[in-house]
Length: 168
Length: 342
Image (cartoon, rainbow over all chains, first blue to last red; front, side, top):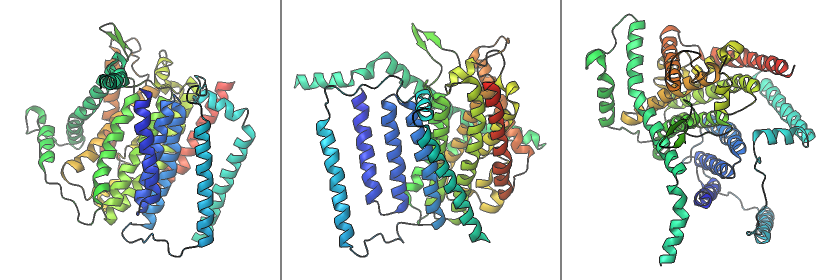
């Protein structure tokens, strides 16, 4: 039963992930990204991690992607008037990104081969519930959590300051 | 060959388990009920609005004008669908579907009564009982914004675009208030599960413990459903009809269906969080009837608000949301948490 849901979801997410990169219009890419986030949320939900799934939808598919759509709307980008061709080939960049992509691919493949399908890792029943995530966040990872919060706050204040000087 | 068939059968076997069958039936019933409640709601709104404005409202088709919603639905179904030639066809068709779909899905986790036993099977009167039910509703209603954004983007019309922009800005701003005011109730209960929330209110509904949160949640809820006085996305005088300017026929009707279903969901949320859900508090009512009466009352309040208040100006709306509602919410949450810890 789980596989019956998992494979379509995984395929759907992968296809949409490709769509993000290969779509010609920015709106299309953004929509594919939203769809992919939803697919990922579905996979989390399938692992009984409902809380993570919902956070995925609220934060990524909801909050962040709405801002993306906002930018697209404000700039009024349309697929038809925007040429998304590679203007100049930068050889160095091409070589670098190719190596990077190959490295990631190599890592992924080795992980897949090392993974023992017969005895998958045991996940505790409470995995991904609000209580467990909250506890982990505020005990083991309290310092990184607070540092990240301060960073976000600083970014927010910075954005406000920048926008203000432009208005005046 | 037969082995292959056996394997396939084994693969889809769980589909025939009672739990799965019950779930599917529940999903169908909830979706059908939500769609079926829209025409009577439109009728109710038009009749009540008529009375509030000292006129009769629709009263010609059938007794009390009850035939009006059916006549309207049939008319909308058979109307020609006109699509602007420069519109993005795919997104244009996708937008109303997203609006209706998210509106229906959000209702999936709303419990409207205690579990009943039918044919020896205990059936909970809810679509799904997930642990973070309340967050699920916020997540899905957040997805609903995309319907409006896409409608605004794909219509290739400046009024639609403005309407879409306004709706997304408004919904993002008021979602914060909505979430934070619900959070103070969650702090009181200590659970994100809607059924726990209702069971914790069996003696006192939270409206008495959290009056400020109730008020904030209600205001944000009205704004979130794009109802008057917060119906800026579709302000007729400035934006023609906002994001659905270019829509006709059934696709136009689907935006309205989404709005009315969202109204029902929002009323149910307020009932669950603050009015004690299906608890009847000593009155001889079935749980489901108590729930329905509360939701109906709130729907009438929504309509009452629409016929009473003039529309807010857009900048006032944003200032109100960010500078009044949000600080009040945070204050309320802070006080609630402190009291809870002490």
